[in-house]
Picture 1 (spheres, helix red, strand yellow):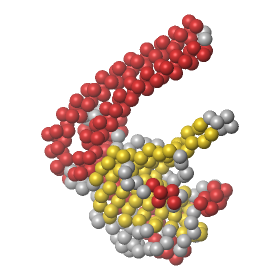
Picture 2 (cartoon, helix red, strand yellow):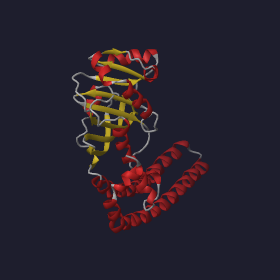
Picture 3 (cartoon, rainbow, N blue to C red):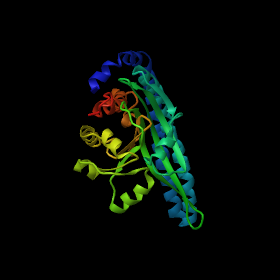
Picture 4 (cartoon, rainbow, N blue to C red):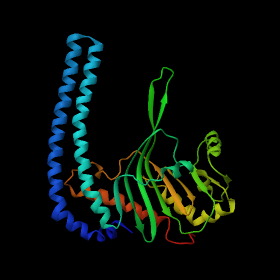
Length: 310
């Protein structure tokens, strides 16, 4: 389904947008602009204040303290801008997803994050932030998608905590209409040492495939060598390679287990946020629709509706 075909499915949403949502977004955009002006004013005042304190007192400790307090104030006012954009998203996403027959939850409630960890599609973590869960069916293919930010917390010799983001991106799973019993994991190809260490993390044995480009980009591990080749047909590998060239899927890893295809796409983008457009700009809605179209592209590009997957 292309973008124009997707727009045809949203006739009901267009009426809702014109009759109810547009006025709400107009109001939120006015508030956002006012909040942005206040933020810039506070930021300039904070910079001027900290700079003046340093040049007057020449006291580094006092300057650091004043800078820290000023940063807290500045972040508070920046948080007001984020809150307004979040209100806009909560006005748009539920109705937009409903128009496509999907369910939307601001927070990922039934994420099944454990499956992604078990399959080693995501690294170990201590903290998590999960949001924008979307679930539903596309051409009889059930799916679940959500955005994840995973953080690993470590302690140094002096007990100081360090928080490192180890994964940020999209996690999704789709019905894979092809019978299989084992587990097959397809991870990114790394250095020789990286692949060796990665091999200890995965269940099953390394699978060698005949496609040199696919072999160069991915490492395959499976509990069943024959089944892995049954799943990863030459045609399917070609579609995966083409799909992984898109920006969102550039760091794709995936796995097959329990009749499902699990996908992890690491990227730094905040999804479903309107790409920074003004809240009442039609491009704000358009960019969100294009991100939802990505779900249709997965089903279409990977041919998930076909039982043979040839």
